[in-house]
Length: 153
Image (tube, rainbow, N blue to C red):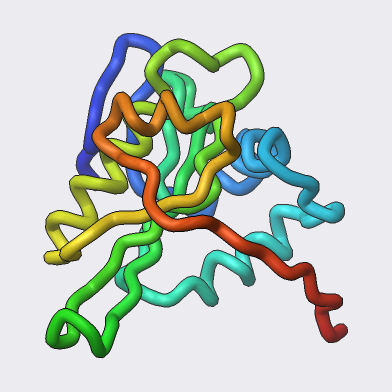
């Protein structure tokens, strides 16, 4: 598997199952509570993610995950069956902020969306991150809304 981008301190590539216990869950946990998700449970989640969606990770030369993001591809009826890329779960491990990890991950997601032929790429973010995403070419559009639902168990 070829690297998408390179830096002296990390490279960006597609998530591999071995990454789940090598910093991936810790990194994702810096974004949101994982509810005690184990590496074994995460493997099941990974196998259920539909293709052509792709999870990217930033890894150190030693192979430790220090950043991640996901590009979900959604086929639409509008735009003659066009595809929308959704960038989700951009997370950078504490101590690696400001080193280009998030930028490299988002750019990898955008490039993959282009490869898939997406007509647009969208994401939701907190207000304090708007300027970061604007520097990457995004613009504010619409309003994000949310309703929390109790999951069935």
